[in-house]
Structure formats: structure tokens, C-alpha cells
Image 1 (tube, rainbow, N blue to C red):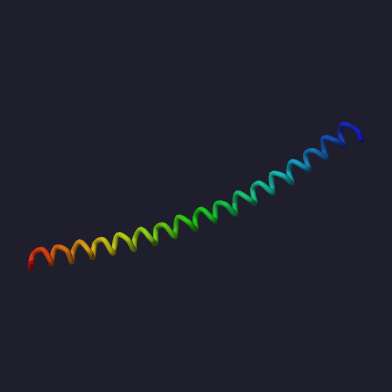
Image 2 (image 1 turned 45 degrees about the vertical axis):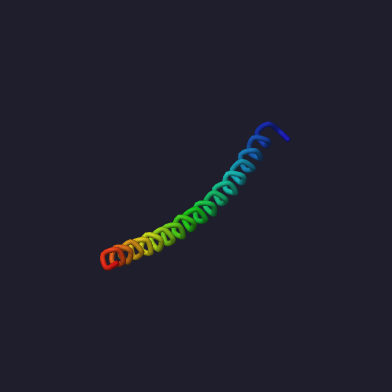
Length: 64
């Protein structure tokens, strides 16, 4: 194998590895975005429940 052939082979191998890495990062990004969406849903639910609890507590304290 000549130096030129070796260089071409290594470039192709590196390109393939970079594509694999990019694909893996893309999957990871979707996974992270999904976790963020789930956390946002949970956060909104907790905020709403806390708000309702605070309001019911105020009513209880005012009429208690």
C-alpha cells in the first residue's frame, strides 16, 4: 500500500468514525431533549399542585 493509498484509506476511516460519532450525538441530543420535556411537564405539575395547596391552605387559615 502506497502512502497515498494509506492516506485515502485513513481519511475514509476517519469520515466513517466521524459519521458514527455524529449519529450517536444526535441520538443523545434527542434523549436529552426528551428528558428536559419530561422534567418541564413534572415541574409544571408540581408548581400547579403547590399553587393549589397554597390556596387551599390560605382558605383553611382564614376560615379556621
